[in-house]
Amino acid sequence: MGTLIVWPIVRAILDTLIVTGPEGTRVSLASYRFFFNDGYSLGNLRITAWTTAVSVAILMTIALPISIYLRFATGRVAAVVQALAIFPLFVPSIILAYAFIRVLGPNGMVDIILNSAGLPRIRSPYLTVWGPVIGFVWDNMPLSVVILMAGLSNVTNHAVEAARDVGAGRIAVLVHIILPRIWPSILVATSFVVLGLFSAFTFPYLLGPAAPEMMGPFMLRTFGDVMDPVQARTQAVVTFAICAVFGWFYVRSIARNRARAAA
Image (cartoon, rainbow, N blue to C red; front, side):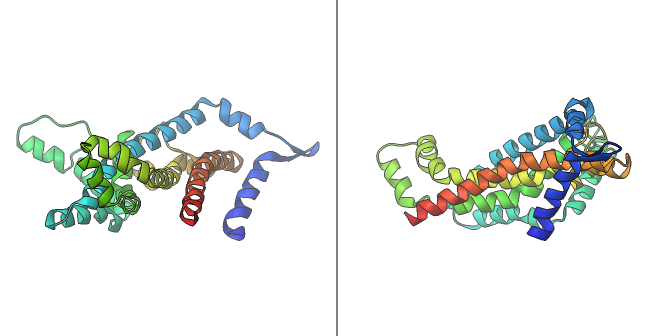
């Protein structure tokens, strides 16, 4: 951890703060002032935050009902649903991006089918802000379902049956019995997804627009095309600082769960 994680982070922060010039070595916030005063950089940060927030919202809206269904359902249908929810785990991101382009891209399979049926074409999400969102939701579905199902193991059938015996409906059971017990798992799943999405590269690079772009491709282009390593490190530090906030929520949730289990 010290060699591969801590030291590179410290080195990146120092490289963005320490400036060596004719006047000697000094501490400067010039790179950060440039980032937060540059409209293009701020636009990329905003589109990254927007894409992450929308992806997490859609993902939780889909994953939570699936997890609750799998927790209480039995039989072949439940087994099929679970297999479909876990299946994206075995599909590499690059393969998914290629399949996305071939199916939903211009002149893709959907366009061919609609054209054959005499129907108008749909507006392709390829190379728009919705391209990475679709990829992120698909790619992070298995992890979210697994984490939420682990949290749902704390919801006993006796608690649900007792609530129903006193007249609680499905919404009341969800709000007062299920959600309070799985809220830490929702925070953990959200933190994991945010940490993965905020600095993602494959989907934004292959499926997203060229401008504005998410922070992952932005950092690569700044380092390789613009050849400005200091700004690339500044972008990385800003990204790390935002991700560290969600990492803190994750660590805090784990610590509280351990303390609760010990008590």
